[in-house]
Image 1 (cartoon, rainbow, N blue to C red):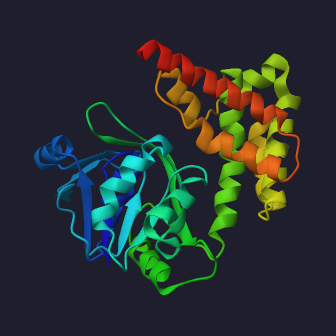
Image 2: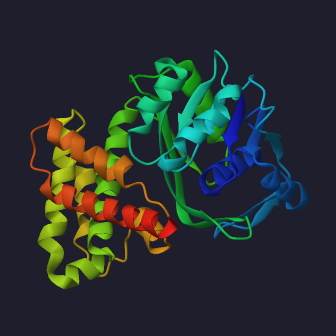
Length: 311
């Protein structure tokens, strides 16, 4: 199996490096810009992890000549970069190529299907805490590093099984070929959407919000997100919801969403892609989404302020 990874950032770089270590994929390459290509040529792909630091020599390809023989293109980017990411991988997507996005949320699926066709796109969920350092190194903060993927229509396919075999050889990754990947994506959205909405709206982590008297608001937000998933045909299992609720009721929790961390850093945020999607899905199910709308307006106000400052 030949696998192309867009970029060599935190997620794609980590998963790609572990794939190479596993040795089960026939070819793994990274589609990168010239500056990143030159850095990797000098240093290799550098990963800092509590499981052990390493640097690998890896194959990179340039955007102007990616080839189109790839079996899978792994796409990890922020939603606001999705349009440019689609154009970057378009030359690499041939008639038999599967596109595996591991973005947060769900709304990117329709954009990718419009670009490449319904049958080309898989569903994916990444569960990993990683970042790209200013030095261009991938910092894996802590286990786990899970990856789930599957056919959007459900069931199992030969291409998903082949991809699973390639990833199962990769060390320190728990891989699941899911026959119900949309359920998995909705479950992550319930957790991530609630956490993003809460921390962006309140400008603090979960423990701080609880100690400020916000426990009931936290539970209302979480239960609303779960109700939206259920109303859209993807109820989250009770056991999973119980685990999520433990985090949302822990006064010592320092959990925040990456969206809030991006906001604190002054960068763009995925407010419409994640919280906006939940709002529209909730309205479509005739649910009261007022609390989510407050978070959406808060995030959009921040984006407006960024735009005004840049003007």
